[in-house]
Structure formats: structure tokens, C-alpha cells
Image 1: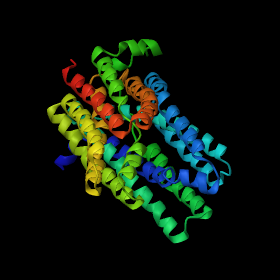
Image 2 (image 1 turned 60 degrees about the horizontal axis):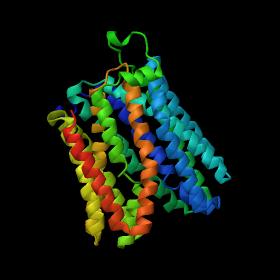
Image 3 (image 1 turned 30 degrees about the vertical axis):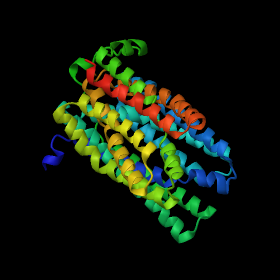
Length: 390
């Protein structure tokens, strides 16, 4: 089929892996706050601590695991270890009896995510030609998002049959182990390490040397991405704003499904579009779209408007999670691709934490229009810089 032309088997297999993993994760992590509050008796400040620790670990360690995977030349081993660690730790959820247990599990599970993400993306890039790389990353994100749609539905079904009680929570944690273990098995038996170019089989650079080897185009893109990330706040804050506008819990679910549905449908076509017209105009357009979404959340007042904004947000994330990685892969070589992808994740993550805090402070002090308007201005600036960089 022309739709899948240029897509290597590794890309399909890693797409299946991400689908299975997200089915498992999205069964568990959306209900963890409820498990913490209703079963373990934790407060909101504890949930904030757990999620803050998890997000920090996930982003700030990416650069180091990306570098080590470059140096070892055995990226598949990192991918197996990362998915395997996350799978094993889900066993702990079945037996967790205190919020401290969840803190350790979530934090360590995020180490598994860092361990696998950059090496996995480097395998996708190394398995695909530049002319179809956007499509490849788009397909991978689409499969991942499909899992994010299936997982919550599975958890909802368990709650529907068994009620919202402690045994139902622990049953979901046990069921979630099945796709997680299957994902690891798929990697072991079906993923093949791409053959590195002859030029890449030379002395491996040390950490700081590898960073210096990244060219000016990459460093310029990293700077623009860092600037944009200062406008990029948590999805949860969009839900809060939607609720402030007047959406009920059921309405919020509709909005969330519209986001994931569009994200799933748009990932591969937008990745393919970047293969044809170039990465930079697609990325710049996504930054501008994000600014328009922020403005939309200032003006929106009806359900259909908010649902439409969440759908547009799905378009933005489809680009942000696929085309950006394809662009980085294009402007780096195999020898430094892992550290380049890891440094990008770490830089974006480093900006993400203060950006959320600052956004919340501005919102509390001056109101939603000022907070969302400020984010929109920063995003537009990043979009313009993206267009003019060399």
C-alpha cells in the first residue's frame, strides 16, 4: 500500500510495542490519582509531588541514556531494559499499600521511559530513509495514541462491572501487566538493530565531545524549542480551564476523546506532509496553531467550541511528537542521534517545569486571559523564529 511505502518493519513492530504499552499505561495512570485519594488516603499535595518527581526524572535523564545508547551501539538493549523495567514495576502497584510506594514506583517507572525513548526513536530514524521519516514517526505516534484510547476504555469496563472499589483498582493493575509483558516480548523477538553506517563504526566520542559535534542547525532548533516550551503547560490545566468555562465531567471526557481521536488520525498524515513540504514550515505552523488554541481558550464559552479546541490541540501534538523528532533525525547522524534526541527531550523537560509553575502563578494573579495570552505570544515568537532559522 502506498500509505505505508517506505516504512521499515522495525517501525511497525515498535508501533505495536507502543500500542501495547500505552494500553497498559493508560489503564493505570489516569486512575492513579483516584487510587491515591480514595484507597490510600493521600492528599492533593502528595499527588503533585509524585507527578512532579515522575516528570522531572523522565525528561532530565533522556540526554544521558541517549548518549550511552550511541556509545554502546546496542540501542535495542536499552529499549528492552526500559520497557522491561516499566513492566516489572507495575507489579508493585498490585501490592502498594502507601503513597510512598507509588512515589517510588512512578519515579522508577519514569527511569524506564527515559531509558527507552531516545534509543527507540534512534532505531526508528535509523530504520527509515529521510524521505519517509516523518511518516514513520507519525505512524509510531498514531499507534501509541490508539493504545491511549483503548486503555481507559478497558479500565472503564472493569469499573462498570465491579464498581469503583479497591479490588477493582487492583484488578486493573493486574490486567495491565498483560499488554506490558507482551510489549517486551515483541521487542525481544521482532525488533532488529539497524546496521550502522561504516562511518559510524569509529571511536565513540565522549559525552561533552558528542554535544559539541551537534551542528548549528540542531543547536538553533534546540533554542527555539526551549523558547516554545516556556509556553507549553500541562494538559491538566486545559481541563481545569474547560471546567471553569462550564464543562461537566462527562463533557470533559468528550473533549478528551476528541483530542486523542484527532491525535491518532492526524499523526501519520502530518508526518507525511512534512516529508513532502519540509519539516520547518510544518513545525512553525504547529507553534502558531498552539498560540491560536490558547487564544481560543480565552474566548470559548460553549461545549462545541471547547471540543473543537481540544481537537485542534490533537493536531498540534501530532506534529510536536512526530515531526520534531524527524527533523532532529534529519540534521544529525547515527553517531550522535541518540544524544541529540535525548538532549531535545531534556531541554524541553527543563523548560516544562518552570513554565507550568509560572503559568499557574500568572493565572492565579491576573486571570486566565493574561496567562493564556502570554503563552500565545511566546508560541508565536517561537513559530516566527522557526521559519527564519537557517
